[in-house]
Image 1: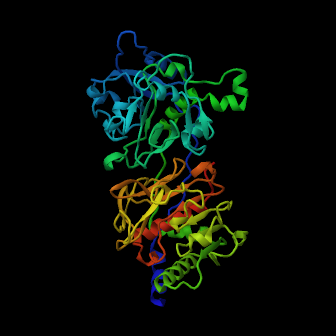
Image 2 (image 1 turned 90 degrees about the horizontal axis):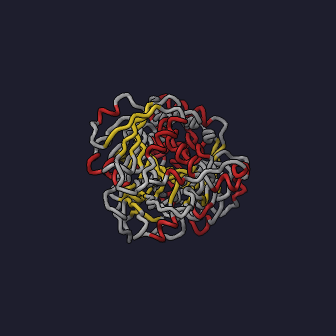
Image 3 (image 1 turned 135 degrees about the horizontal axis):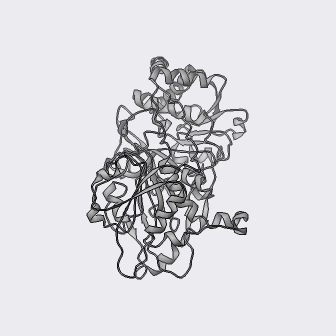
Length: 504
């Protein structure tokens, strides 16, 4: 045990902690002076086409618009700041023309979602166009939608709170909205029917992992509009704009504008500091910080006991002022602390709902407690579970898929497969709500998040709002000594993000 402790104290000096990078707010004038390529097509006789209205609206926002057809060469995007792809294009003709474009792309051509790597390619499973006649009830239901979390960047720019709202005006007209099912590397702003698999507005940050291991070369946004949806986007004007409830309810036009403004705003910058610089930054942050490490005292399993002590020694080597508490002690022990770490050595039954309402950051390592802390819904083996050696459908694992490598928790590592542990073993998985920032999933299990975070104020499971930052890190009870150098780097980066000031 003492050999293990000594090893981790030494390793601590060569691992990283990623500095938290604040994301700039989306400016109201973000489209001013931007060069926009607007790719459009034709609609059938008698079918409304809002493309001219959108072109004129972009002009009022200060954008300079160039029109293009689906068959025009991709060089049409040269020198442009943004590519818009309308639902009126023929996706078969457009093909993968702008898939690799290193400028932002915003599209409401649902059939183009898979061609751009934004969703899978199965109609009505990975994406859909909700045609009025065969989907009459669903079409009408889609006049209402759910904003996922007020911390979502597009929703913040649109001044839309979490909850139900009306993106479209119910005017008796016919429209064919669309939805997509993006990867867990996407941020989902709006869903239809409260269903995470029916994203009405979703986005990928630059370098996010999309479908099929594709890396987003620039920001990408998928929207729900049909050929004539733009003209009936809801908008609170006049006296309605002064009524908070009306303003929150009629937000369709603001949502459209915010999606475009977010797309052309500077992308999040990934960590570029050296490991030595990141280590130094974490040590500076640790000074004076009080950490409560919640564990089970007197564990009957020597390897679990050794793992907890190794982790405590590593935290102290960084300069943290660490106290311990047994899982049966009251969560009032967190008073005066800066961070709570809940070890996987705890017993969920005895831990209960402690620390769920803590207003300070919480790092949860006990993955079975994700529902008790409000981070994931309640169905075990459906909403959360583990890969293990026992009765799991999924085998032991030591790799993860870094789908959001640009996030500070990614520690500057490249997108794709990351060897988190030296040997395969227990690895937790969850299906968190859209308010979560999924950092990593499990290979060959793209819907299973294994490392994810909630910003303070984010909407967690069952509409619970995060009272402070939250992270689930899949560190099973005996596995701290098994972390790779990269794995320990990500763990350190997690601490750095948790203790940094929340985004404004």
